[in-house]
Image (cartoon, rainbow, N blue to C red; front, side, top):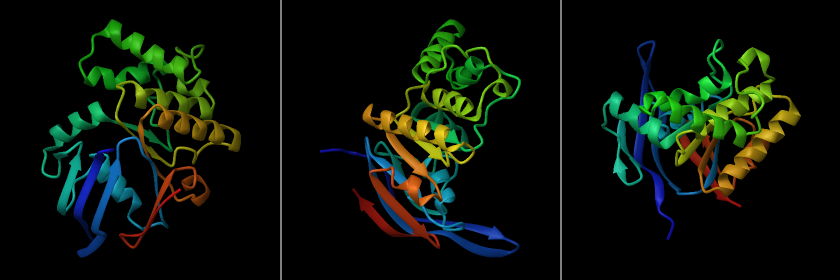
Length: 228
């Protein structure tokens, strides 16, 4: 039986905006099993980004419980959450989030520096991931010397370098042309085949359909949860 890698129970997230309490997420209950490819979608303001931040250990709920690999993480400190992120979660963002003056291989090494991996081993691990995403001839290129698709490949290599259990992809094709976008989608499918859990957050319904399970949010609530 496949176990839940992420489980959230009665989750509520509230924000204060201009003195008004806003319910961003309302009593969310959700399980994501190890190895699933899940998309989370919905209109602007639906709560999908808030949910991604909580699933990715970037934020905490107002009330409710969050379990990652069976461990409750709802009440952990910021430093404890950072350690979990670095060990178990790889992030791919729409804006790539690469350091502009740093080479591709140095960008990919960053999570390994935080993990305390020795320099020589870091370089080898980063090189292997760049080879995996087809950039073996771009190791020393800086972001401004790479196309958008190549920059996103560097970001994917960085997300993979610690061999995380979970890949969080936030609008990963949003800044790419159609051809590059299709290449990134194929890479996500390949990662899913390799047993990574993929959580894809997007407003694009066509992109969301690439996942094997589609969760739709509206006004902070799950209104649909369908598997292919």
